[in-house]
Image (cartoon, rainbow, N blue to C red; front, top):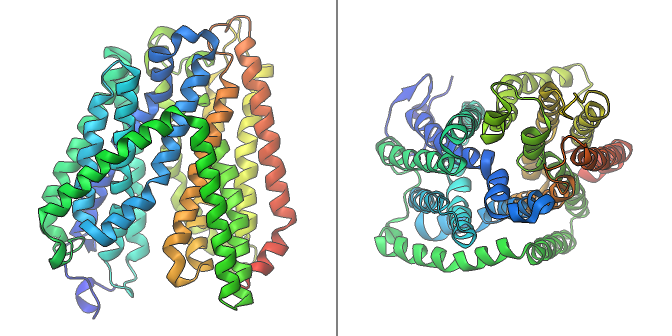
Length: 505
C-alpha cells in the first residue's frame, strides 16, 4: 500500500496515520459528521415545526406553506456552494472558509429558537450562507491529503462519506425523537447548534494534523480578509431572506441560471471545435435533467413524507402524542442507515458486473434510480389504498420500505453522477460543471417543495375522514408516473446518450 511519504508529490502535512490513512482524514470526517448532525438534526424537524409554529392559523394550508419554505431553504443550501468554493480558492483558503461557515451556521441555528417568522427566516438565511462556505470546502480538503497517485484516495473518500451518514443517522434520534418530543421541537434546533459548535471546536483541534493543507497563501493570511468576507456574507443575508420569503422569484432565478449555464456549455463545446466534447456536454446536460427529476422526487423525505409520517402512519414506538411531538423524526435516519448498510455492497457490485460484462451504463443506472424512487411512491399509494386502520393510519413499515427503495435508487445515481461530471467535462471547466450538477439539485429541491405543498395541502386535520390521505395518494401516484416515465425514457434512449458520451463509462 502506498503512503503519503513514499510519493514524490505527497502533500505537506505532518506525519502520522490511523489505520493506514492520514490522521487528518479521521479528524475531518469527525468535523463533517458533526456538521451533518447539525444539518440533518434541524432538517428532521424543520418543515413540521414551521407548519405548527408559524402557519397553523392557515388550517389545511399550513403544511403547504411550510413545504414551500423548506423547498426554498434546501434549494439555496445547494446553490450557495458555488460561491463558497470561489471564496476558498481566491480569498480565504479552505480552513478559514470552513471556520467562518461553521460560526455563521451555529449563529443561525441559535436564532431559530426565536418563535417569530421574520427572525426564523433570518436564522435560515444565516445557515444557508454558512453552509455555502463550509460544505464544498471540507470535501475539497480531503483530496489534498493524498498525492495524485495515492491508491488510498478512493477509500479515504469512502471513510469520509461514512462519517457524513453516521452524523445524519444519529441526529434525528437526538434532535427529534428525544429532545423535540420531550422538551419541544425548537430545542431540537438548539441541539443541532451544539453539534455545529462541536464541529467548530474539532476543526481547531485538527489544525495541527492538517499542517499546510487548506491554509491560505502567504499573501492572504491576514485576518482582515476574514472579517471582510464576514461582512460580505452578512450583506448577502437580506437577499437570501428575500428569496426564502418569495419562493416564486427564487424558482425563476434558479431556472434562469440553469438555462444560462446550459447555453454556456453548448457554446463552449462549439467554440472548442471538438465535436466529441460538444456531444459530451449535451450528454451531461441530458443527465442533469435526470438528476433534477430524481431529487425533486427523493427530497419529499424532509417535507411531505415527514408530514405523512407524523400525521398518517402508526407510531413506530410510544403513544401517538409522543410520535407527533417529535418521534416521527426517526424516519429521517432511515436513508443514512440504509446507505451505511448498502453503499459497500453497491461499491462492490459494479466492478463485479463489469467483469462479467453486464454492468449498466451511466444512463441506465440513472434510469434504475428513477424507477426505484418511483416504486417507493407506488408502495405508499398501495398502503394507503389497502392497509389503513380504523383511524385512517398506515403501518409505518411501508414508509420504511419506501425509504429503502429511495436509498437504493440514490446509490444507483448519486455517486455515479459525481464521477460522470468529472469525466464528461473538460478539465478547465470541471469546477463549473460540478457547480451545474449541484445547481440541478438546487432546482430539484425547489420543485420538491412545490410537490410537497401539493401532497400535504390537505393538512393533518381530517385524518379520520381520510381527506388528507387521499391528497397524498393522488400526489404520490403522480410522482410515481413522473419517475417511471423518466426512468423508462432514459432506458429507451440510453444507447443514444452513450454514443454522445463517446466511450465515457
